[in-house]
Structures are given as C-alpha cells and as structure tokens.
Length: 275
Image (cartoon, rainbow, N blue to C red; front, side, top):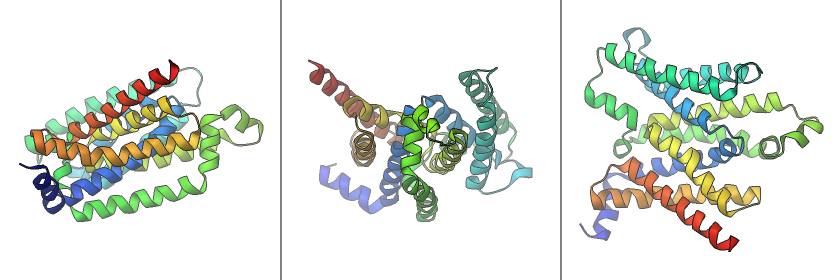
C-alpha cells in the first residue's frame, strides 16, 4: 500500500482511532509531567490496572453497569484510599502502591474467569484497548471528560505546578499540600479511567511516562517541559498508526514505540549538549 493510500485509509475508515489516540496521548502526556516530577510513576501503573479491573467487573451479573462507569468508580475509590494511605509514615508509599497493583491484577484475573459473558476476544480487547474501533460516541464522551478535567488544570496551573516542582516553598507560603494532592490525584484518576477504557492500559501508562521523560531530558523550564511533552503526544499517534498499517503491527504498541524513539532522540540531544 502506498503512503498516500495508508493516510487516506486511516482518515476515511478509522478517523476516530486517530482523533481518539491523539486526545488520549495529549491528556496523558500533560498529566504525566506531574506524575514523573512527583516521583509517583508507579501510581500511574496502579491506576491503569485498577481501571481495567473496574472494566472487567462490569461483566459480572451483579455489577452490570456501563464499562466507563465501572472503570471510573473503581479508580476514584482507589484514589481516595491511596490518598489516605500516602499520609501514613509507617508503610512506604511504594509498598502501598505495590500492594494495590498486585491486588488489582489478581482480582482482574479472578473476575475474568468467573464473568459468564466474557469471551477470549473480549478479554483481549479489554486489556489492550481497541483503538481502531473507537466509536464517535465513545470519542465524544472521552472528549467531554477530558475537557472537564482540563478546566481545573488550566485554572489552577500555578498551584499544581508549585506543589509539584517546589513543594517545600509552597508549604512555607501557606499552600495546603494535602488538599492540592488530593485534587490532583482525583483529576488524574478521572483521566486515566476514561483513557484506559478507550485505548487500554499499555497506551495510557506509556504516555504517562515516556513523553514527560523525553521532555525532562531536553528542557529545564516548567512550561517548556509541558509543551514538549504534549507535542510528542500530538505527533506519536499519526506516525504510529501509519507504521502499524505499513508493517501490519498492532496499533497501540506501534504508537508507544514511536514515543520511545522520541525519548531516544531526546537522550541523544542531551548527550550532545553535555559534550
């Protein structure tokens, strides 16, 4: 298939796969800057697994709710619990996250085995996301959710950035770190829950980590870090989808792979700058 044919096929047959993957990549790339800077990368991995568990639970007869509702409910409950556990001094934060991660994966496997309606194909699509079959309704639902979560991020950009990048100074100036942390984790939970439903946990976790790391390698100013991370989120899905069609690869791993290439380029630029 010629390059022009691949591009026209994507735009004609799978437009919402392109739009949806860009939407999720941008949202996660932006959110990921906070997560990486806060040194809670494992938090993103945990929430993606909890979100998938919520999706899986919706197949149970006694929890027959829409997939997005189940994912969001489980994720927000987990965020509230984790925000309380994080304040304790006795158990390290990594240990808490590890416990929840293992519990989520084990519970998801058990639910999948007992849910009568689940078939092998459904399980696979649930876990990895089915980008090529994102529907217009699902896309606009996700777009609305992301718009709602983007508003407080824009309005309180200064506060979130201050607490994230200079927490000690923020506390001395009267900012309540606990309040802003809970607000951030709740917003992160909403974004991750909706994003996981659309594109799967691999894609979401990949863009929570890879673009922010690449941006941190080449930029020093906070605003520049956000811009570079989001720009990578914009560029990766079109390139990744194109390569997936060209070489007959799965779409999500292809897009994440392109992000890894960007991170590699950022690392090389950093080395060159040092020399």
